[in-house]
Image (cartoon, each protein chain N blue to C red):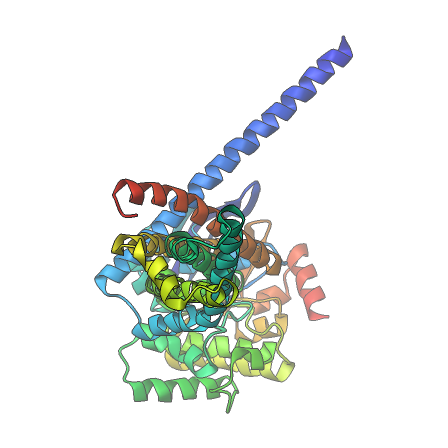
Length: 276
Length: 242
């Protein structure tokens, strides 16, 4: 009997612990959402009021756009080639000749792979750097120092990063689309003996302006996800070097998960709106 | 004048400040001593509004720091200089830009005036020819002095120093002590200094206060500290002086 009571009590304590932990986790998530919302609101208010340091914004645009260009060019080119190779192989197996290589490569790059690949690469290169930089400033009291020197960290750090991500990611996405399709064309002409004219005709034949807009519009939302998550994680970093490491990992993982979830809902929405 | 009245601050189950009250008169230098983790830095951060107290009242130069708008807090901070324990100088800016940062944001000085004032402040803390260096190229002690130069650059009425001489050699510590004394003497700056360095405390303090278990257990002149019978203060002073 005593053993049974002890087991029941132990189970109750465990349940209580789990319940506290769950409530705590939910509370922390809601608190985090609230903080992220406040920061975003403040950053956007500053942008609309024109409280922007042009010098810092340009510096960040160079960092996000220009310095990310080599990696975007390289990965997009290879992604286009991989697509062409795979589509050519699959259609050769089915129809004994490579067909729709240009069409599928073009569509895949423009509506999905261009925006998502670029967003994931920018998350890894820029999002992580934003979190690590702001997080280090937080744990070394540099954010507190900004307050004491009459500067709001959101205005000083987040606003230029918001602007640079919001404008640079769509530009990089367009470049990624073009370079990816070009990579596909290079492979098609060499491996599948498809002439470049035929490839471009296939690639662009079924596309409309909406096909490009589909990926382009998504890239603005991805940019917001990257910069909001990165800044929020940075501003809320706790602990020393270990805390910065954890915040950076969490920032990258959270951004990637949110990008993929948002991608589904945005695709569904844009298709419903006829932008496809 | 700085007025701190019945300040409470808790972190989870730990009570760090347990009803702390004191005043710092205009032009006075108050030194706060106490063991590590007793809440001295938290008290300073409460005074400048970086940490919000759970209850109580803090007034700096007539502004109620504990209950004011962000704009009022921003205005109040223009009058307060803060020297951080770990210097907290900005990694992304060079030394000149670090020291000039407050001048650009808190004053309406011209570019030339900012340049002159910045150079002057860097020289005042015993640094020369470091303006174009990055913080990573400086030693810990040099960074600390840059932090002090940055805090005094916009000539605040109130200075809060969080362990200003920790990590400095005795000669440089003395330079900083003299700087604190001169700021008081010539600019009538009101200062609150948190330190473990009793030599520094005796030299710069008008009054010394000891924080223990979230409460003030001693508040008196340097001479009163030397002759105190309070066993905690006595022990702290003896160990610190060794």
